[in-house]
Image (cartoon, rainbow, N blue to C red; front, side):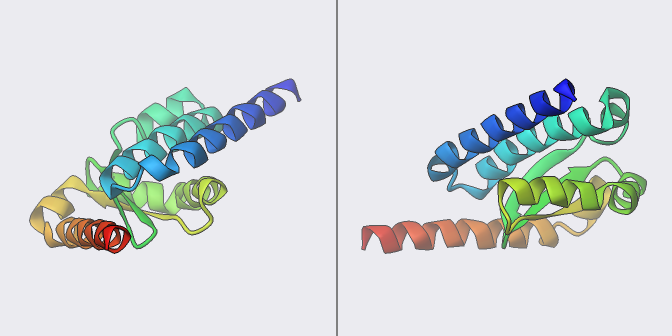
Length: 138
C-alpha cells in the first residue's frame, strides 16, 4: 500500500515537472526524449527492472509528431513483442502525461530500410514548429 502511494507521488511530481517544462519542450525531438525518460522510469516501476531491461532498455525516442511518440527498438521482434504485450500499458501511461499522446514502436532495420517514415514525421514536426514560431512572431 505504501509503495503504491510512493509511486503515485513520484508520478504526480513527474507530471507536474512535465507541465512546467512543456513550454520549453516545443521541439518534437527534445519533447520525445523527455517524455520517454519519464515513461521509461514508470515502466520500470510497474514491470520491474528485469522486464524493463529486457524490453525497454534499448528503446530510443525518435520524435513526437501528430501526437504520436515514435520509439525505435533494436529489431522487428522487439517491436512486435512490445506492441502485443505492452503497447496498451505504454499508451495508458502516456495518456496520464498528455491525453492526446499515443506511441508507435518501429525497429531500427525498418527505420533504416524505410527512412521516409521517421524522416517525414520529423520534417512535418519541424515544419510545424517553424510555422508556430513564425505565427507567434508575425
